[in-house]
Image (cartoon, rainbow, N blue to C red; front, side):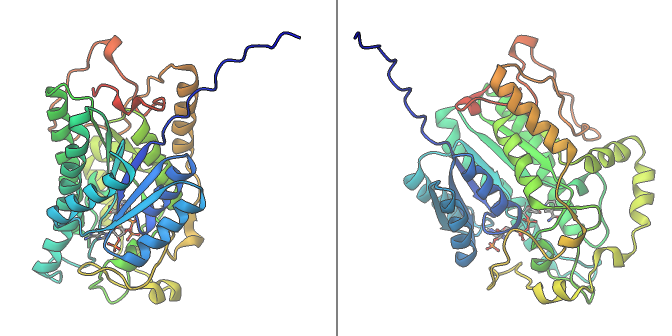
Length: 371
Ligand SMILES: NC(=O)c1ccc[n+]([C@@H]2O[C@H](COP(=O)([O-])OP(=O)(O)OC[C@H]3O[C@@H](n4cnc5c(N)ncnc54)[C@H](OP(=O)(O)O)[C@@H]3O)[C@@H](O)[C@H]2O)c1
């Protein structure tokens, strides 16, 4: 019988590589697990060795390769060293997620100068340092995607969090500048900024509070796995900015169309809405602004009862991205965040050159052209 000739098996694509700062808990750790389940190799950076090991175990439990490096993101040289160490172990990153961040709760005059500066150093300068480290890896290869975790509170400031709100507003503006710089340079490296809602993570246990009680997220609260999915969409798609959940999308439009209404809504918040007397939250409290936490608090925080486990918007974006990846067509979704007041309007490229917003990119397509 004639032997049927079979085509040789397609070579297995090498796993893509993601580096995540703030990968030891909350959103960063949730993202580590998600990328690992989807076959990526994952490099994790944070200060706490125990938290990093726990997150690494999540990654390895999926069969994926992982590596960790201890660094304070506020220390640019230490972060660069960590990036070099992870690159030596895993290879050059295809995606880099800046998720490290911390805050302090209190009225401006109660927050010390050192605390205010530290929040800025970690949450803003840590992101700047992360983008620099990522660009050093990506620009020589002219490929890669950087995703900065910002916050929905950039659309209107929240009381008791002025240092954090300022730092996150800086993260958004900084990201827009870098996007234009990359475009002007004709680079294929992309940068996206995502704006999550209030999320049930250990963030509120890690932030010092001057209010007598630990902080809590302002409802509606979502589970971190939803933000992890949004990070995946942003890292593998083409959006410049993405609001996460319809709540943040609606809020961003309210703040844009009627800043007075947004200010009124914020003014209706009592301080109590940002504080918790819940015994679980009191037990979990461990401020870690100046040093790594001694306990591993994991992916979710102590606010499970109130947290939503799904978002129709994120599910839809992820679905569209999967479909687009299969059929090679890009959904014509626009960036979900409205432009910042006063931001320059960037001319859209020609239709043929126009990549999709937050749409699927095939395995090697983190190299698509920035728009
Ligand atoms: N939770 C929310 O409601 C919410 C909403 C919008 C945006 N975000 C943003 O989401 C990101 C992740 O926060 P999360 O909610 O997941 O809180 P989290 O659980 O406290 O995670 C923060 C992560 O950042 C790391 N980190 C903190 N300071 C660091 C430093 N100086 N150097 C290196 N790593 C540092 C922490 O690890 P070590 O302490 O071990 O260093 C941890 O891995 C932050 O940027 C936050 O601002 C959170």
